Image 1: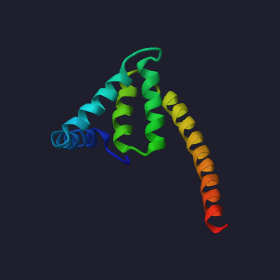
Image 2: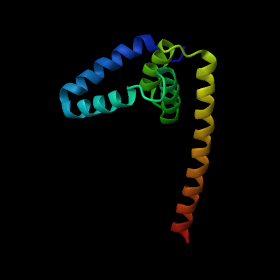
Image 3: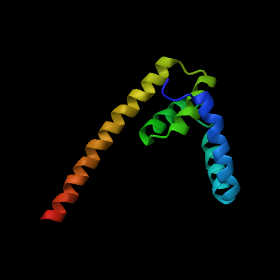
Length: 113
């Protein structure tokens, strides 16, 4: 086990609660944004959680992975569905690295030109 999410998640939520006490407006804004994204519309809860997991991987957010893996399981996602969503994240992240490598090389060329 890399990270014990059942132990990590409550500790993370406690730390976020402390941050919320110190920065109430920021946490309220995040909560409003999160609540708006979580409302059902065209996508069901399982699909939203699979997307959330893929995004969590590409943004390297351990807390997001912990929270959304639990939510995906609760929404009925299978291990195979999670693996497929993560495969998309892997492919996209590699593509992003390719694009940003081209940008970095271009920026370097501008400096040394």
